[in-house]
Image (cartoon, rainbow, N blue to C red; front, side, top):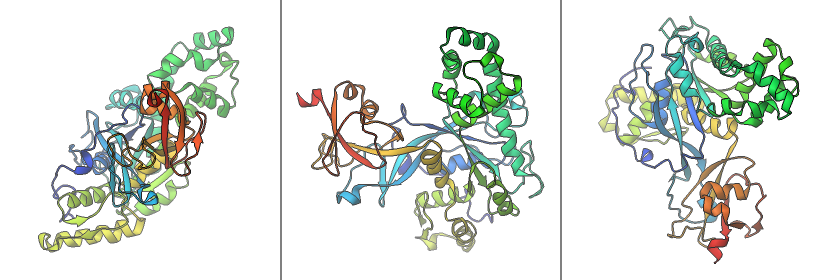
Length: 429
């Protein structure tokens, strides 16, 4: 991409969109941004969060993980209810509710990381907390397996997808294999199930017990006879567990470079969701928007130049190149689409709006539609009460749907964009 306007020369500024506190930290899912060095991983992280981190064209620029706040973008419900909202834990911009989520930019990984090569131990320690992974791949094939620059098209990016799978699986194998014979025999003898006996080891990996049983079922293995599993059986089980517990989204980055489009089509044939992207373009657009040079918000399908007099001819040309070669070709830059896809498809989450005053759709301070929560699909009304506050869950009586004023019980399953008021015993008294 021509450089008169880029992520590096737009400059940085504090964004209002980054001033919203992450109110849902205890319940929201964590996205890990992963990949080998020099694929644009840190650029993607900066574009998603506007955090200031070092970006350079050499391996292992990221040594310590960077944490930041990105946003899930979803249509706000205020237009449906014909009200003006006053968001508290999120933002509403031009009809889009921007819900804060946490991202972590993890140190680059190279082949052999599970054995401690490169920054492997650091990478794998950080991946423990991640609920889903966004794998940044250089779709142009311009970086080799070590993360060093090479001629565009020289490296096959499909190899990067495969090696990351292996590294994470082998890391999990080394953790779960320790004392496996003893654990398996004990599980057979006391009939409590292998998931129960792996619970302590799995806690540190953010892996739920139900994932273990699902992995056993999908692997076609005997849940009652884990001691009879062969080494191949065990590897298949762990690999399946990885896919379930650490789902991966592929971001085909640098999509505007030669050879990238052909590689994107090849990657789409894999068993992954693949999002074509240009993190560099997104970062340039966001920084230009922060300076008031253009009108643009993350995920927009186009942008408007607001102050052409403040831009050089070269900068305007570069912006138009972003528009024609990236935004119009792919629909968006891909960065916001990747975050939304990770939460709504990989993690299967929905948005719910709690209110106290049904008539005005407000909280006790009169703020209209103040909060938006991301919760897993299948969450019940009573479970959601605990998400808001433990006391509200303890004293739960029922909830009321804001659309039809229908009373709903504790076992009712919430739907995306539900607006509800929860009635508790304490509130009534």
